[in-house]
Image 1 (tube, rainbow, N blue to C red):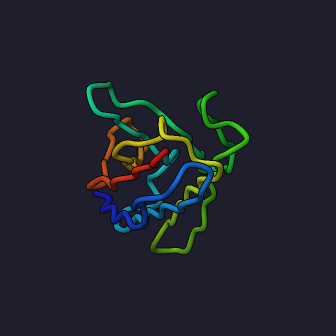
Image 2: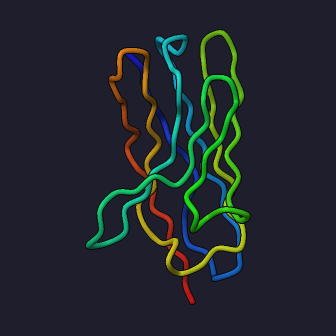
Length: 118
C-alpha cells in the first residue's frame, strides 16, 4: 500500500501563489504516476497535473504556464509538489494528490482546500 499526506493550500488573492506538497510513503517503488486533481463546488473532479515515474509531465490546458509539478524521490518516500502561480478565482477547489501504482490501483490523499479571492 501507499500512504499519502498532503500539505499546503489556503486562501490567496487572485494573482498570488500557493504551493501544495504530497508525500507518499509505503510501497513507493510501485508508483508509476502521481497527479494532482481538483474538485470545485458542484463540479466533477478533474486532473490538474501529473508526473510519471520517469519525470514526464502533463497539465490541464487551464493551468499550463501557471502551475508546475515536480517530484523528489528517496528510497522510502516520494514527494510531489504543485507550485501554483498567477492564481485565478476559478482555481478554487479541493485539491487531491493521487498515485497510480503498477496494476492500476489508485490511492488518494485527504484533500487540501485552495481558495482564490477576486
